[in-house]
Image 1 (cartoon, rainbow over the protein chains, first blue to last red):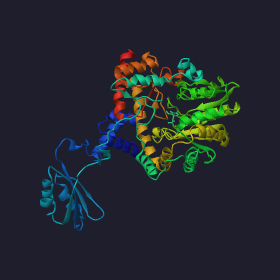
Image 2 (cartoon, chains in turn green, cyan):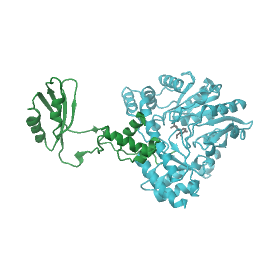
Image 3 (cartoon, chains in turn red, blue):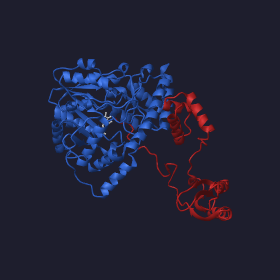
Length: 164
Length: 390
Ligand SMILES: Cc1ncc(COP(=O)(O)O)c(C=O)c1O
């Protein structure tokens, strides 16, 4: 299967990973067997990492606290930022971690049950790590959009039910 | 006083009510319907286009424009048409901005037809052509096309219907409702027919940018056809802008001047808000258009594949966003099929005969709907067909 077809499969799954192999095969004009094989390969190559739902937790839980923490790091000879990064991303509290260009080095996304819990994590775990120079914590007050999905958007169909 | 009806112009009174209208009322009174009967995109107009309209309003663009439409928009239309369809029109004299392609169709009929002249209308087709011909005093002549020929129009079919009163031929490819497109060679044959009988052509190419497997061939771009053709296009489908009501016509300056006369007395100009948005669409809308097209294409394959699995033979549409499967295997007429499907499975599709008698035995299924809707609707159709196929 060519790369474009694989990309199409990935785009479809990224939008809705509950579509069946048969549906995807029909959508792309491929055989089910081909799609099945391609997906299996993509999983083995860890191109596809997992199949997950995008959830608006604020509707279910009273308090979910998300914070973005800018971390400045002194890079290490030979390993650069990777070693510090690993020390950080191993914590299950860390939901995502990126190396950034600009005013700071690592951007850490943390979720916790309360502000206090998050603040303590930063103070006790992050700030004290060797090579970490400084941290700045920003709490998320409201999520408007994530992964391309607008949280408050009502996907309502305003069209006439039948038209020529 | 006579009854109100007796005051009404009999030409108007005798226009057949749209088959779609009747069906619309049925659907409106049914609960929990998944509708695949919609002739417009399910996408909302891309954000940057909506935003261009807000900014335009903010800057005070709230007035009439030139009767022809904003010169800047006409220039953009003319260069878009030249670049994409390979036919050149003078922006200021050969391009007219209208209230949807719909208005352009009406203007062309009224500007060209003299009472009693005949217009060849290949069917199945969009519902507006025959009534606009009639209202302009002309006589619409049906020319059936068949699934056996992939809904292609042939000069043979046209020769059977042409008379010395024939003035105009309507072409709508990519086609609503069949999704058929016509390739260059087949259109060249039609062009020879047009020349032989000295006809004009109204080419409604509103789905031109929505083709899959093969690029659109603009009829006006064929040798000798530019000055015989009124090219009609718009923004409703390709840019998901149905509500903005902006379309356009391109053609010989003389035709456009006469059409503009009617337009100027009856409409004055197309709304400026829509024109501002259309300008933005042409300038920056190509990538969103392509993104939508990729989605339509996936749904198209899915829908056609499912119909064939279900056992309703489905011609492969190569343009627009409609599938036109045959329902003959069920032994039902188009209308029976649609009414029963609506009642029993709460899925709305449009009976094929709403698009002309040669549409009998088919249904029009719009795949301008989410994959979730399409999946659910096709499962319901499958259950329905299993009951009736016996
Ligand atoms: C073939 C065809 N022409 C014209 C139109 C009308 O388009 P507009 O919204 O530009 O008036 C439609 C809409 O359904 C159509 O399918």
